[in-house]
Image 1 (tube, rainbow, N blue to C red):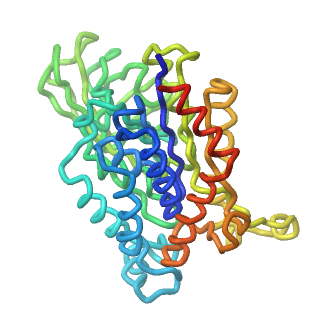
Image 2: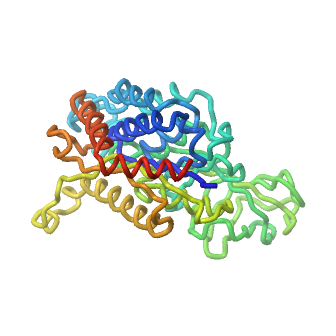
Image 3: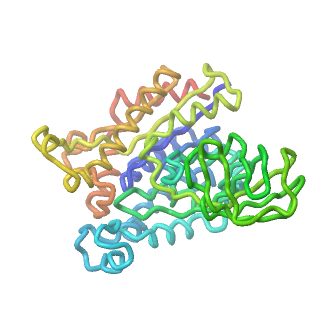
Length: 393
């Protein structure tokens, strides 16, 4: 029996392309997507789509969501807008283009008090990136042992969608639990799951939550990463032992998951394998938000420095990570992968398709929706999709 994965790329407002394609697929299978797929993975705008689908929201409503709320998330186009003045006062001249206030407001209105553990089925996977640990954050609805805990759905999406230069990083609480390796009067050595980065836990609180020394809380004055040694602000009253369990309260600094996996399909396949599913049974429907066609000529790339690369580099990084993940997934599942993606040019409809993630003009949104419909009606695409769905009944 197939284990069906739906993978949804990032791409800002271009997520409306994915939503439109999904609405047409939903009509074909005559079944809600959250009942058809076993695991849904999303990054950035794909995380919003994934969370919405997992909670049972129909794709047609998600298309309307993009139409109605995009201008709240991206309230202006120019970085020189007077509406940015508050941001500049708060963050300085290099402030992100947008506040995350509109994004948070919209997502709270969609998901309310729902949390990631409120979704028993399908499995939900959302990718973000932590700038402190310099590692991906992979939110999983079935992993209640992870440091992010029972996070609100809106917050997983804000974490995943906080694209550098566009939105500020999102501060997210993190709890690290582990077993004491050893301890002395004023220090403690953490287990192998703790970070090896120097000073990463400086000024955080460490509490012994069970075993010898239980109930004691100390501040970490200095953390030495390689031996995983924490030097404490004061001595223990009772020294913990290897039978003691510690807990550290710290934070994630979350940014857009697209910097590591803008196409989360490879992450989803890896998790399916970890859950015990046979590779031969795993199938993947992977949806992009459109291939950028705006070239960066050699003459520019050769001479550009920090200022010129600042904005284009985000798009390059997102595109590169998506392509690499597609390659890995294709090598793993081969013919059981269907990738739906088209170029953001005029070939499909003769109309302009912007590759900007924040072009929320009515014209662009309508053009993207129309292009998605035309793309899916192409004979080769129509045939490939039909065959994929037939194999996965």
